Length: 508
Image (cartoon, rainbow, N blue to C red):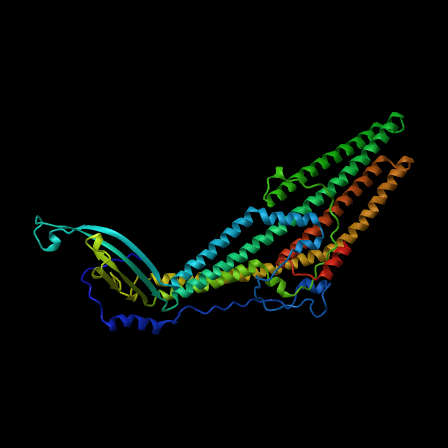
C-alpha cells in the first residue's frame, strides 16, 4: 500500500478510532467457509484376488480392509532391496540423485511451499517506510484565481512509515491459507508420486535389460549349436550322405538365429539407453554389463491390509486437491461480506531538508486516504456469485477425480495380484514344456546322426526348444516386472521385517 499525508488533517476522536477495532473484534472468527469432510467412497471388505490366493500373512490379517484415509507421510523405505540385487540398488540411488523429472517435481514443491508463506503473510500487518522529496506547482485555477494568474511552486520533503492490516472478519485470509497449505501438501504427494514412479521405472527398465540379456544368451547358444550342426551337415554333404536341401535348411536356420540375435541386441541397446536417461545420464555415459535375468522368488502377500493402498501418493494428492478446493469455496463466500482494512501512516514532512526531523514537522494519518475502512459489497452484476459457483464446481470435480483415483488404485492392485497368482501356474507349466522341448531337441539330434529321422524333424524340435527357452526368459521378466508393478500399485514398500527379507534372500 502506498501512503501519503495531508497537511491540516485533524486527529479523529477516540470513539472514531476505537469503533473499527471494536467491530473487527466482534466479527472476528465469523468464518463462512464450509467445513471440510473427506467424501465417502465405496470399498470392498477384501481384495477379490486375495480370496483366490492367501499367502504369507497371518490368518487374521489376510484380506482385511480399513476405511480409506490417505497416509502419505508413512515411510516407504528402499523396497527394491527385496530383490537382493546390488546393481539395482546402485541404479536406484543414482536415479534419485540425478533424475531431472524428480528435480522438477522438487522445484514445484518448493514453489507451493513459498505460496503458503505468501498466504500466511496476510495474517500480519504490512509495514512500509519511505523517504524523498516532492516538487509541486498548483495551477492558478485550483486556487480560485484567473487562469493567467500567478502560481507558486513548493518543495516538500517527507519521511514516513505506513501500516496496513486486513481484519479477517469472515475467514477470507484463513481460507486462503488453508487452500495454499492443501496445495503444498498436494505438491508433496505429487513429488512422492514422481519419486515412486521413477523408482519403479528404473526397476522395470533394469529387469527389461536383464530379460534381453537372457534372450541374447539363448540365441548366442543357438547360433553356436547351429554352427556345429552346419559343420556336421556340410561334412555329410561333402561325403554324399545328404542332399543339398538339408544343407540349405541348416544354413537358413543358422542365419535366421544370427539375425534374431542382432535384433535382440538392438532392443537391448535401446532399453539400456532409456535406463541411462532415467539415471540423468546420456547413453554415452552409461553401460550396463550383460547378465541374464534370474528368477525372482519373492512372494508379495496377497491379502494386504488397506493401509498399503491408502499410502498411494496419487490418492493423497487427489484428497488434498479436494481440501484446497473446499477452502477456496470459503474465500469465494467471504467476498459477499464486509471487509475491514485498518491503515495508518506517520512521519515527518517539511519544506526544507534541514527541518525534516523537527518535532514540529511531525504528521500522521489514521484511516484510508481514499474510500472507507469498512466496505460492504452491494451489487457487482453477479461476479461474486459466479466465482462461488465456479469454486463449488471445482470442488465437485475434485471429488469425482478422487473417487476415480481410488477405483483405479483398486483395479491396479487387483490386476497385479491376479498376474502374480496366475504367473505361478504359468511358470510351472512353462518349465515342464521347456524340459520336454529340450529333451526332444536332444533326441532328434541323436536320431539324425543315426539316420533314424530326417533333418526336418531336427529343425522342428530345435525351433520348438528355442521358442520355449525364450518364453521362459520372458516369463521371468514378466514376473519381476509384475512384482514391481504391485509394489507401485500399493504405494511403495511397507517395511517388511528383517526375517521376511532374509527369507526372500534365502529363497533367491
